[in-house]
Length: 456
Image 1: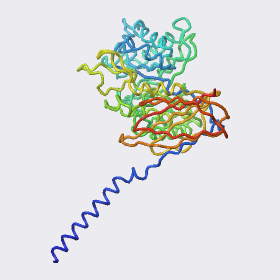
Image 2: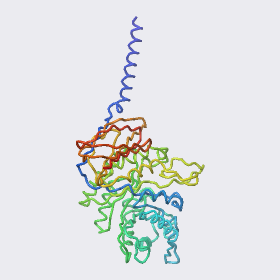
Image 3: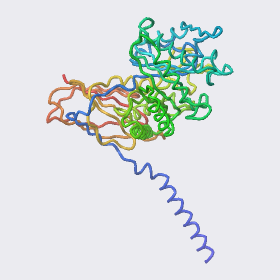
Image 4: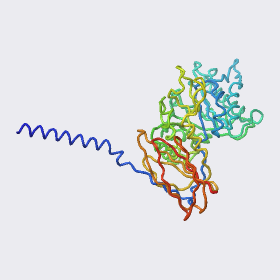
C-alpha cells in the first residue's frame, strides 16, 4: 500500500507540473487584450504624411527597373533609394591625376526613377575603385580630396541647374558603414572623416538647386553613432539635414522604441530633433518565407501605425527580388515584386498593403481600443473617413471578431466599404443617425482591412 501510495503521489506531482506548464505556455494567448475600436470623427490629430511612399532597391542587379516601371508607378512613390551608384555604374575613372566622370549608366536608372513619379534618393556609395585603396569599394580613398571631388560632381550633375537640374534630391553619405567597410566613429577607419570630406564636396557644388544631405545609414540605431557623430558635426560646423538608420524587427513596437531613443539622443546633443529617415526596413533582414506572404503585409501596416507622425520617411526594402538561381518565383527575398526571370512580375502581399495605405489621406482621427493583435489608424479627408486595421500575429493563429464604433459622424447616407487584403470586399449603403455607426469586424491571422465611409 505504501508503494502504491508513493507511486500515486509521484504521478500526481508530475501531472500537476504538466498542467502548470501547459497553463504557463498558454498564458500569453489567454491574457492577450482583445480590440474594442472606437474612432472619434471629431478629433483631428494632425495631417497624415504618407511616409510609406518611399522605396529602396538593393544591389541585386544593374538595371532593376526595366520590367517593373508600371507596377512601381502605381505605388505613387515620392522617393526611390538606390546604392552602389559609383561601383555599379562605373561613374569615376582616372587619367593621371585627373578624375573623369561618365554618368550615362547611372543616368538611365535616375531617369527611370523620375519616370515612375519619384525623386532619386542617392546613397553615396561605394568608393569608386579608381580612387579607392587597393581598388576596394569599401575602403577609404587614396586621397580624401578625390572623394570630395566625386561628391561635388555628383551634386552638380543631378542638382545642378546646368545639368539634370533636379530639385529636392536627397544624398546619403554611404550605406551601412558599420557593415560595409567596417567604418567606425573614430579610429583608423573613421566615418567622421568620410562624412566631412563628403560635406566639403557638397558645399563646393556650384549653381545647384535645393538638396538634402545627411547620414549615417547605420544597420541599426546606435547611441555611440548619434553622440559622437553629432558632436563632430557641431564642433566642425558641418551640414546635417537629416539623421538616418536601418531597422529590422519582427516586433512593430521596436521601431517606436528606436525613434524615442533617437529623439532623446538628438535632443541631448543638438537641443532639437532632426528629420529622421529609416532608409531601409522590414520584418527580418535575412531571406525568409515571411517576405512572400501576408505576414509581411500585416507587419508593414502594424509598423506604419507605430511610425506615423514620428518619422519623416521610411523606405520599404526592397522593390524587386533578385533573380533566383533555381528559377523560382518565390524564394524568400525581400522584394515587394517578384523577378521577371521566373515568369510575369507578381505583386506580393506587402505591395498590396502599400496600395491600401495609399488610399488614406487627410487628417488623422482619434482611434482607441487597440488590442494585443489588432492595431491601426484612421483618417478624414473632406467627407471621406478611412480606417485601416491589421491583425498582426507572429504565430499566425489568432482570429478576432471585434466591435468598431465610429462616433461624431454627421447624420446622413453613406457608402460603407470593407476592402480586405485577403477576402471578399463589402459595399453597403448605411444610414447614420445620432452621429454614430456600429460594426462588427472579423480579421483572420495577419489579414488587413481598409474601411471607408463616403458621404452620399
